[in-house]
Amino acid sequence: MNEPINEQVKNITELLAQYLMSYGMNVLGALVTLIAGYLVAGWLSRLTTRAVRKIEKIDPVFHLLPGKIVRIAILVFTLIAVLNRFGVETTSLIALLGAAGLAIGLALQGTLSNVAAGVMILFFRPFKIGDTVKLKGEIYVIDSLGFFLCKGHLPDGPTVYLPNSEIWGHTIVNLSVTDRNLRRIDEIYGIAYGDDINTALAILERTAADEPRVIRDPAPLIKVESLGDNSVNILFRVWTAREDWWPTKLDLLKRCKEELEKGGCSIPFPQRDVHIHQVATKAET
Image 1 (cartoon, rainbow, N blue to C red):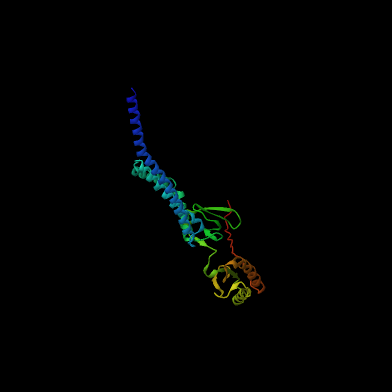
Image 2: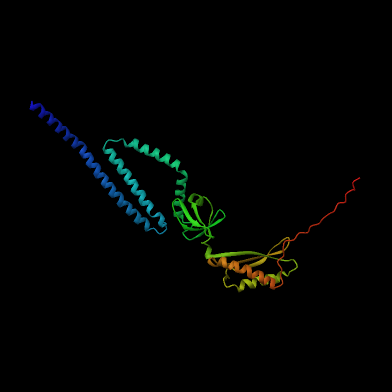
């Protein structure tokens, strides 16, 4: 009676031993693979981040992204290797992940376009934090850069959030970066046809020469620009340092008008001659 029971116990023990030898090694191997993959992923991520930080041309916002991509890629490959040890068909899993990635990419097409544009902005650096840029006719001061959007504010204060795809897809004019750090002031001053042109030119040339913020090279250009309907138009073109452009422009605008008036030159208003014709009508009978 005891012999059959002992035989069954022996068979069960041998079967458990076989399962432990077979699956136990797989479980142990899977744990070792997971731990090794996790450690390698962290090590390579830190190594990549340190290498990227040494490249001065790359924006600090971009420093952590390559390391995160490396970490995620290694962890994904580690998970696939672990599943493969347990006999899971990884080919189908990879195809499923690819299809899911495609579906997610199509659903997040707008968001991904912002990320792609953000990477291009951070890589090519058309502007940096603190720069004043002109986009689609509007002027913004950039406060921060990001992968999805850039934060800025209008010159009069309100905060603006700019999607990266809207920035990268249009012409960007960086007003904070100019050739030789100079910027040009262009104004048109109209004088009456009865005023002396040479007197007006001399007044404007003297006004430009008396302004210390006006650059002498390139030299100021003050010439008759056109003969308008109501005035003789004089081009007043001078150069100044980029940081002095706005206050110099405003000061010269006021000073040039005052000097022209002191010199006897008048700035005419637009005028129109209106002729009224009266048509005689027959008296009603």
